[in-house]
Amino acid sequence: MPRVLTIEDDAVTAQEIVAELSTHGLDVEWAANGRDGLAKAIAGGYDLITLDRMLPEVDGLTIVTTLRTLKITTPILMISALSDVDERVRGLRAGGDDYLTKPFASDEMAARVEVLLRRNSVPMTQTRLSVADLELDLISHEARRGDQTLNLLPTEYKLLEYLMRHAGQVITRMMIFEEVWGYHFDPGTNLIDVHIGRLRKKIDAPGQTPLIRTVRGSGYAIAEPV
Image (tube, rainbow, N blue to C red; front, side):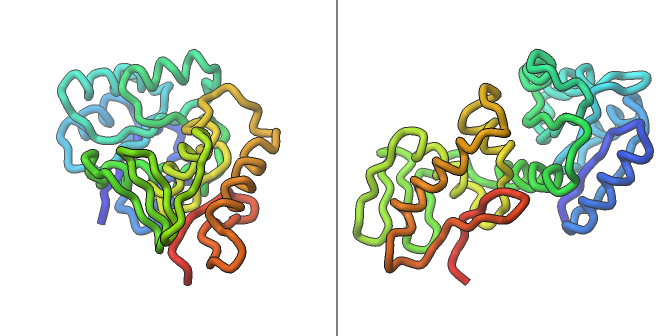
């Protein structure tokens, strides 16, 4: 069972995180301040850390910087009420793996945790991704479904690669915005829906079993047919 360390000084938020991640089969331990959280993180044994940015005694930015200086590579999801782009950049450059702003939806937080855990378990030397009869060559950037080569535009390729790296998981629109386009687009636009629609026309052609599915109110997923 994956172990998660949650460093959060607000008890209500901490309980929400612990409860949500526990329902996903994760073993979650809580540290209520930065000093205790840093000590636990250094002691190790965790597969992932959720880290509040503003903490008493030792702040979140200092924690992530200290861990990376000590060559501790545990994935870190930073959670903060500081939503400015500059603050996100500071957190990521300090060594955070992802950044989630408060208030947040519990299911999105859980999805981000699942993605980080999966990313940490996938060998970086992987050169080919596959879902059913859909294959993506990460070296040649060639996509094929069965015996048909798919002509993908660069953004379509990047979007498909992101979905396939997290096959079977629900990826939220915000996560897609951040991974594929960065922080430069308004989540209120239909940009993602348009690109997913174009990708579907190429991946899920008439007569083929659909692989890309919409999860209403959450996002998208690509998975083996059931």
